[in-house]
Length: 214
Ligand SMILES: Nc1ncnc2c1ncn2[C@@H]1O[C@H](COP(=O)(O)OP(=O)(O)OP(=O)(O)O)[C@@H](O)[C@H]1O
Ligand SMILES: Nc1nc2c(ncn2[C@@H]2O[C@H](COP(=O)(O)O)[C@@H](O)[C@H]2O)c(=O)[nH]1
Image 1 (tube, rainbow, N blue to C red):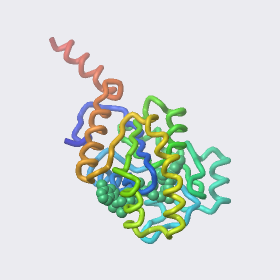
Image 2 (image 1 turned 30 degrees about the vertical axis):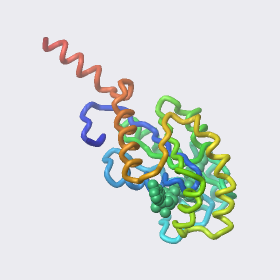
Image 3 (image 1 turned 180 degrees about the vertical axis):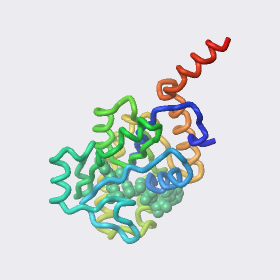
Image 4 (image 1 turned 60 degrees about the horizontal axis):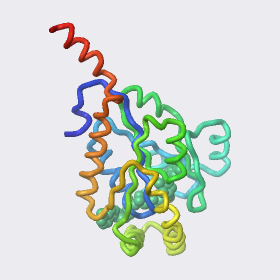
């Protein structure tokens, strides 16, 4: 069962995935987004160059530093951070409208962004940390991805410990051994969080009708 089949009106949630680079959060996010009806991706803005195959406006909105700073300085980001030598930010536009309509928003962001979103919207936020099974496997995945040059892979491995050191700030932790299993775990978290009483804002009316009909 996915959240799309839930009938009680509910408030959406902010589903945050963080991990060291290469642990698998983008892959897991794509799997969820492909099938979960009321889940949309928060498309971040970044000053990094597009990787082969990445689509502007779908994977990221690719900006020059000047464009990024202009957007940041005019309050266009809910959060922003400097990660691996580039700027990344979460556009503010329409996130809270989506939550009010019962749509969940998925964020693939680092620990700095997760902390900032928690500070501005704590009650709506659910944070999941994805760990790799080991450092060796993390490096293997970064290489296997064949998206980044050697120096970028080294730089990301060098920063892995700093990202991992924030694992205990998260509500849930998944060690991503196997993609199918991790996907199942992630879906289970999403469903349970969707069913939290405080998010099911339609419950009070349902119960009121039930009492009146008695
Ligand atoms: N459980 C897994 N077993 C084997 N390979 C995996 C697993 N999960 C992800 N991968 C592979 O590892 C590589 C890195 O995954 P992905 O790009 O999703 O990582 P990421 O955490 O989003 O990295 P980044 O932060 O750099 O965007 C991809 O080639 C992906 O197919
Ligand atoms: N704080 C934010 N972090 C972000 C955002 N978008 C992506 N990220 C994180 O950056 C690294 C690198 O991503 P990559 O696509 O260059 O591999 C990764 O940890 C992302 O989660 C954002 O808007 N804010």
